[in-house]
Length: 279
Length: 269
Image (cartoon, rainbow over all chains, first blue to last red; front, side, top):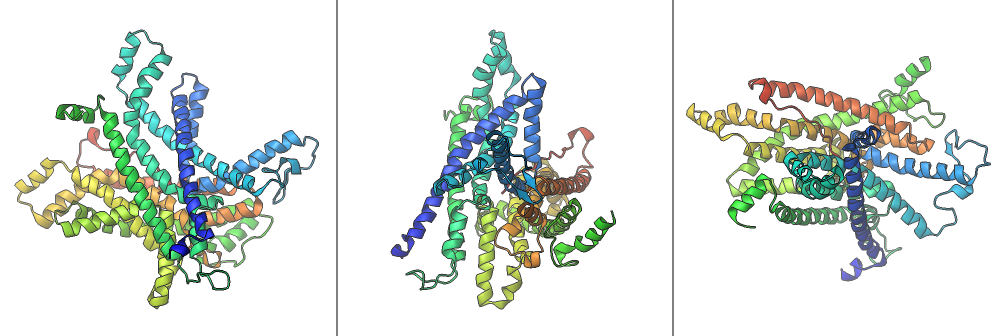
């Protein structure tokens, strides 16, 4: 059993777990940054910037779930290639779309046709991360927007009465205080993000779903030292348990973080904490 | 125009196996894309509506179970809800499919479960039950104490108290969140044919056809927006229906304290 679970192929599934964690690790801050930018944009006094922020949130949230993932990966790839095509091969006269084909010149291929395998893989991964970040950024923007609106007006007025400029009140009062309002929404989002990671499979990444199907499939003794029947069910059961544990751990961690953040805040929970004297 | 009517006649019900057998292979017209993706919506509606109706009943039981004082009732409900809310639906589909495959070899009665129309429906049913149960449980806990006390004062108890006071109030409180869950479920139905369950004779749902066109034409900018348009229409229908019910549930309240439906569609579960 121990030998079976450490074959070369099994190592790939363990690595793909790391891929998932890496995706989460990169996407979460990026999406947060997108969300923060989006939310700040909606509060802007310059109308076009505000529209841009609102439009971003509305469009991404309005489009149904995985359609967006499937759509965005191809769309992004084509936009990049078309842009490179126009920049790198200006003397190419034929149109890019020829019937059902999408034709760009060799130099505009992304990644280049002769690039090594790992470049292809990491390019695919980067596009996936970007897609995740855009989609979840819109959701995060929505949460942060709500949180910014939830900071009591009096807090900002206090800042203004001290003679702070609007930029100063934004960075020194609004931003530090909004996190406690944003955290429930953001932690919810984190849960959704964890549960969205298997969709990497749809984006053509060799992630845990891919390997679970691959490894669980029927193996005959001709190709492997460990022949077995159709074990895919057990592999997916393992994935199920993995995700359950992952969500549970996140839940507990986020709960603790929430308690930590509520300390000294002007919310009901903060009041309750102060009264209970558990600070 | 006539060509388009012909296309609708050919492919309008393609998703349930009526009409032309072969999908269009080249020279895709806009009409073909609209028709086929639209016919795929039949499956999305089918999965969504049935899972929602069946899930509603089961979720009520689960919510009551989770709120129960009896440990042997509470624990299974809690575990069921945790199991289906804590793991990705995508993995649940895969697991369900392979589980049914395995069961089929032992008990032939499970054969229909390996097809999407039943197997995926079962998974969706469990999944939506768990999410809905959590919503109902939350509502159950926030029923105003006064309402239950006045029910007691009127001498209502047991079943009649539940039927006349607790259940309607629970529904009323849960309704806005439940509306979101319904929208969410319809969006989740697009996952079915991407998760193990085979699309037999290319009878797939809307996303299946949309990605078929996107693959064939290398042009995602047409089929996916069509799909999005259909889903926005579907979502509007769901919101319309649910707000009628919402109005009925809130009809006894003074107009200014009524709960408004706040539509916050969420992403993948």
